[in-house]
Length: 122
Image (tube, rainbow, N blue to C red):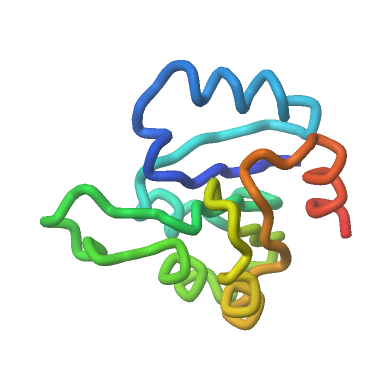
């Protein structure tokens, strides 16, 4: 399974990416992007996409400078793979909205490998 992890924080290489790779590599081939244009233009190459709820586009000159995680989800409405919104925030207030906007699942970033595997295969 090819999984794209889209998170504005992954533009910072190092500890975060290594931790994710170490914890989730058994699920398949992991690719990280902090570039929303890459996400939107290459989505169909992946079986699943994990999108950060609190995505913030840092390049204010970008044509999608005000894009959020929910906005990215809207742009992926025709994507046929699994769309999972994930967040480091403790609350689940965004669950109904993310599901209504096309997410297949909503989860915390601290999700176990087993639970993420369920999200990817359900």
